[in-house]
Image 1 (cartoon, rainbow, N blue to C red):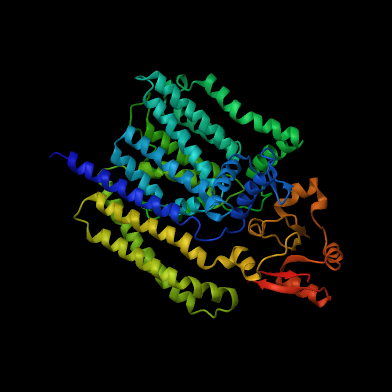
Image 2 (cartoon, rainbow, N blue to C red):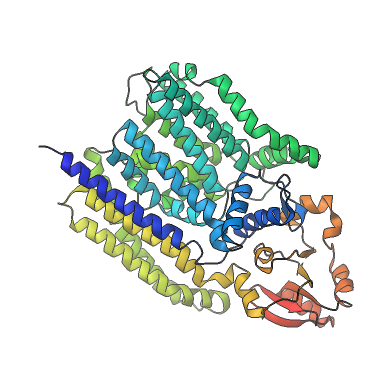
Length: 551
């Protein structure tokens, strides 16, 4: 039987699905306001770069902020300059990074296997719950994942060509080295530690010594150093001690200790992967458990083994750390998606199980809504439940309908059922992060609070007392004075203590004689200050804080 027309039909169908998803992907970026804490931080730092013209030392609220290198800040500053001071522009870099990673995933799938495998793997990654969430959230994790994916793909493409096209191998290896440099400038040493460890483990497992002879080590290291070293030198010169903070505290102490209070048990990321890979959990599980097997003879290059080692080592590396956050394992998803897209006897069974899990997950969501609603709810939980209930019910119905349709079409082609599951998973995740999150925005963003308060007087001082809302800076478009709060501003406040107030007494001394001033205050603190006779006029409030004015 000639399968060429059928294969071309599958490729067209997957291409159209991905293009349609891409249009929606970028269209909804600005639907909801920026959320605390990361989105506020990673939007404000580039905004302050634009305002100050200082692109060497990142600042947040006018304070030195050296927790991460600046590459994403630079890219986001360009987006803000091009498209304005808004959430859509602020999220553009993360969303674009997600798409670029999928393009490279497709390139590897097409070269190592075929175009249908590449498109299927890209679509599976694009519809995974965690991938959609992190591609729509303004953090550094998606850009890091993008660069690590490019590094892995470029390495594979270079080694696949090593005996046929030396010039092409050299170009792809330089892309790999450049991607590692970009990953380092995005989130630090992990950008070279992870790919380096993957190379060592892969060559030990596959006995592929030839890979080392085609690394173009001299040119690659020179390119890496030329891209990475200048910023570290400049930031250390501008702010002595920066290198020690970036490398020792933000890498070794963060990884080896609980200094950031992010301890989770070793199996935490297995649970995150199980939920974050939905609806493709069966395919991801099979890829993770069986992908270690050789698909090429020992000594020959094996792209599938590189992908497996990359996913397995990254998962193990972060699982062994004492500091864990769910987004850390986003780089695991693309390689597992491409491995999980493999055809074969197990593909149909895995797809049936994935569709069944969609149905069961939808039913479980519906039951959870009913059970939770029977509890005696008041205040914040009652409001959140009432606001999210229509969204959760609609999304539960979507999951059931999509999964049931894929099961009902069991006699039809595997590609059609995969597309139904992919479209359902993508729609579920995107609707939840864009629409559902927007519905409860007043819970996690200062934008609704400021909108309710009305315009703030130009030039008036804005305080945050016993708290710090990271989105307040971006939406108020002015610096704030932290009162009795340090948190992640500690490093900057240690260098410039005059930028904050250490105690409530200092705040009251500044507040009382002020002609015009504003303060964001937690409800309990506001009540305590009012009981002491501190003059405050309430402008707006949400579940956590009150925005007050002096006059």
